[in-house]
Amino acid sequence: MNVRSTFPPVAAYDPHYDPLVSEGPGQNRAYAPTYWLATAGEPPPADGPITGDVAADVAIVGSGYTGLSCAIFLAREFGIKALVLEANQVAWGCSTRNGGQAQNAAGRLSRSEWIARFGRDVALRLHAEVHDGFETFEELIRSGAIDCEPQRGGHLYIAHRMRSLEKIAAESKVLNEVFGYASRVVSREELRRDFVDEAEAIGAVHEPLGTGVHPAKLAFGYQRMARALGARIHTASPVEQIERRDGIFHLRTPGGTVRARAVGVATGAYTASGLTPHLRGRCMPILSNSIVTRPLTAAELDATGFRTTQVITDTRTLRFYYRKLPDDRVQIGSRSAITGADATHGRHLQLLIDGLHRKFPPLKGIEIDYSWWGWVDVSHDMMPRIFRPEPNTDLVYALGYGGNGVSYSAQAGRRMAQMIARRSFKGEDLPIFTSPLPGHPFAPFRRLGQRMLYRWYHLRDEAA
Ligand SMILES: Cc1cc2nc3c(=O)[nH]c(=O)nc-3n(C[C@H](O)[C@H](O)[C@H](O)COP(=O)(O)OP(=O)(O)OC[C@H]3O[C@@H](n4cnc5c(N)ncnc54)[C@H](O)[C@@H]3O)c2cc1C
Image (cartoon, rainbow, N blue to C red; front, side, top):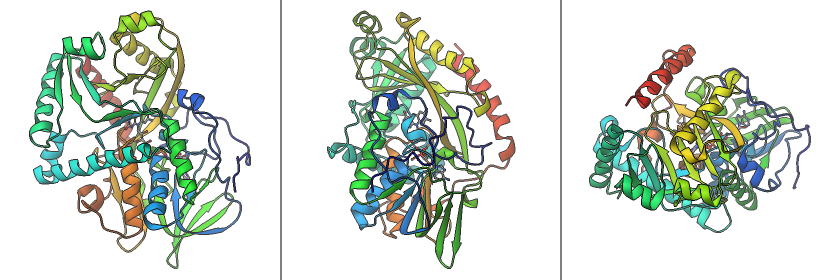
């Protein structure tokens, strides 16, 4: 069945949606107004909403990269044709709103922080897992079925202050000497000559793994691949409740109940508190916004010295992430409002525009063609989890990538498929697979803390 769902009618995009306030991500909401949706072409067909009670072996909640990759690996590795349930449109959440920076990372901690927290042995094995995850992601896009305009060559971590350069240079040493991951320090002169003339840059660290992708083309590629392998993807079908009765999961949607032996929860930052008690208060949704300029002229390209299309982040805690897109536009993103209610306030857009101007003075006044935002799934200990909360039950969740999910979500979906199929895999005893997402002792006051932290980070980031 190929249905371009118009039932129920597509509801307007809600710019004020807030996962900590709303009861759920809505039903059949339109996509956010991103550059990616505007340039991805017609979204591929899906299977329309659930219209009656159905049975499935495995049901997956959420059709972002995680849910879709889980469906792909369930079919490819175990012959299981999953049923994917999506509240809105396919990959409506982060997976069509992100910066498209696939990095050799998962979660928000550095490798040194892994060593401090888990010890050297676990840190090395975590590195192997995340590195393998990057390969999983690359293998999916290299297979030829997905054209997501990859911009390969690595990741540039640009220091905006001398003390940040010292810090990332020390981290680069750890990457090389402990993890055997060949990163290197790039001088300001080399950066200007070979990569980009970024006015704030003091120097940089270059990591060899890093691929910029067109996020929506990646998601739609996963979607086509999953459906070609036999998965069904039902849009406009928010799961309102997950209940287990007589050993079978019952997932209630407005159009009918899905009965399934196993469930994969892949709802990212868009997880409603009532979906499952296992995830209540376990994730801190953080807004990130993004803008895309009009294409740069030849003179502007020359003035900004944009010779690279590699993915770039800076060293602020409230970091900027940016790159030159294949059509010579610049995309740049950073943190945004604390609440959905405040998301449309002009100062959040201005923060990005000011950041762009500070980094690239020749672009002062350039037209901004696209502006949007989305919620990032940050876990309370900054590490992701792919976890089965009840050992004898086949419900597995995967989330908490903390703004580093473009590549690792492919691996997380694969691990979730392996856990659902009860197959073992290398590294399955790592803490990201054996411990739940931690809660937060002051969950109701997290946003107060976030507001104070943002002020402190801003002062620290901008101190001379
Ligand atoms: C602005 C922004 C920039 C980012 N930039 C980067 C970047 O450059 N690099 C990087 O690595 N990461 C980045 N990220 C993070 C990255 O996009 C995510 O880690 C990744 O897309 C997560 O995919 P996911 O499938 O887990 O979740 P999502 O893509 O968010 O998908 C979850 C889906 O679940 C659906 N859903 C929720 N509840 C229900 C329900 N009850 N029933 C049915 N469906 C439901 C939602 O509608 C949504 O479509 C960014 C995120 C944002 C918001």
